[in-house]
Image (cartoon, rainbow, N blue to C red; front, side, top):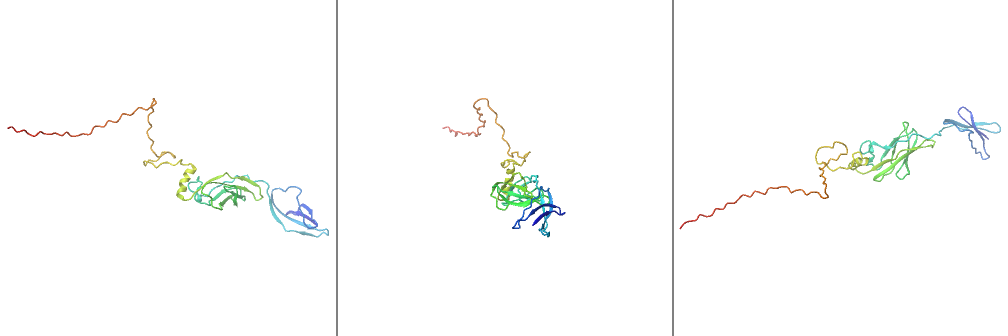
Length: 241
């Protein structure tokens, strides 16, 4: 039995002879170019009988994705501004962009693939974390490959901070991102700082430096003695005899 591999225009791409058990293998003599093909096989025996098999569509793609995928925390699961990666959701949703149709694999803090999805026609994707993340700092990333299995680049690592409670998460968001500097003490006045990160505590006046090894003692402040009213005693009158 002779088997011919033909394309949509009935051009023969390759041929093979089936074995005694009816199996065969066909390999094209030259590599096919990238693109979409509609192929089917044609069977012919020694008597000249011809039959055709069903057609199949497939795509050949040999180039790997070149676009570096983006990865960020979904705004609805974020505590703080657009720059924040603090979340009070133990299973946060992650989003980003890549080439349309790419397979996106989510890599957890342990380095294992924990979930995957397919990018849409606009290249966007959304992956919910499948299990509860431990409270504390966590690092995740994504890697992509196309439908043919060609690997693409990985995203930069995304550093998350997972916590419980929205109020605590809001405080951690400011400290985690370093946007407002370290925590400050409670202000002693109602005046606001002139610039972000400026301490709200009024600084004390610096003490003057002394040239000697020991500072000069300060004189004791003069305090007037308390006023005490004088007491006048009158002698009793003397009587003459």
